[in-house]
Length: 517
Image 1 (cartoon, one colour):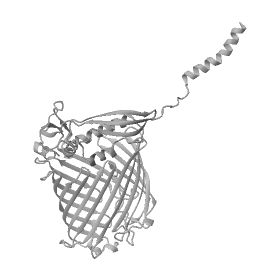
Image 2 (tube, one colour; image 1 turned 90 degrees about the horizontal axis):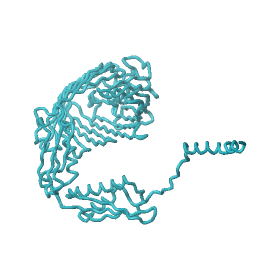
Image 3 (cartoon, one colour; image 1 turned 120 degrees about the vertical axis):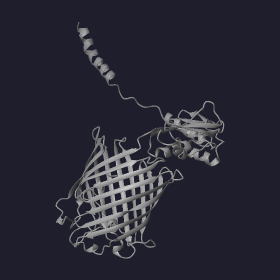
Image 4 (spheres, one colour; image 1 turned 90 degrees about the vertical axis):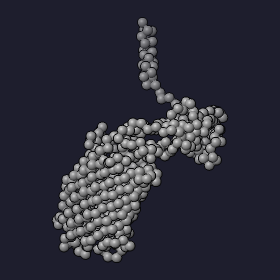
């Protein structure tokens, strides 16, 4: 009996250690070293031009010296097939073999079977009821008899989708099993309603509540013509605009537009009225890059308070100007530039040069749970002779719900002796913002901004920048993203007077629909 008890006392701790070890096993050591690609050999790609073959070698998703993974191997095979299909081999096949060199190194052999050379054949269009076949065909980047190219199909989908008339666009090659030399394709679209509308609300210090609306018809009288009616009303602004756009004007990349506009700004210290119109020609060079050349003509009238000594020489008259806009957009970045010249060799009262450039960048972090967004903007307007060569509407200001959110609209600018904002000739602003998820439909934001406006043209003094920062909330709703931002002036604008009174507080509350940028 004593022996049995002794065995239990001795075996008991061992038993509990065994159970604990089973429930909490020691971490396994990764003793398997990654397999390194020593060499990549391409076979059967002689049908490609030498330069394109070299480009394929450089752009393969896996390179010599890299660790081999199944995902990288599959991506390399897809890239090889795409290269062959872009050179007229629609039925190309690629196989990848691994030839071990030693325990931790291998050689990849990419073998291609290009198959027969192919050309685009007949084109069928399906799914369209209100949109004519001709509109879709003009957007195609290929025609029957052209050499088969996979990129032509992808570009065609982008061109057709950019019309905004369809929920989905799908282009597929048909009869692939028969491997015909002329490959037929079918373009299948799903139409959406040509009517679009958007209602926006916003609140910012100074402006108070603002209401905006836009109604658009994307197939006005057919042929993918677009009509936009837009208006906005706040305590400061009143705008109304009608715009007509003819897309596919003789070419899928060419668009023509004409618009009429009425704009009033009724600030405490100044009043501005602009009535006129603009015609423009746009060209879509690539899916990412577009340019627009415009000519605008408008009647400008302004009235300023006697306290704005710098602006007492403002003129009323006709503004005639030409401009060029360049726009380069990608999902993660945006570059824009506006160049404008008024007067000079053109008739009119006002004479100036104007340039504004802007860059934006978006970067996901923490496994896409947050986004870092940044924006930088610089602009200048330069009169050809007198200060009065610049109309009041074109003078530069910062502040509001989208930029320098610690101030109200038209509050950041050079000041008159009485402390009223008079606008300037140069501006610089920079914004950094972190956007992150909180709950399912609730997101947060933190931002910091720097900027200022100066009286000199082509000038920026980084030592005199103003700063603001603050938190924000974003709520996803069925009507769009609701945005609330609280901006606090880290470095206030000394001497600023609002509605004739000294600035009372250093914070501004902003509300809007959609992100600030």
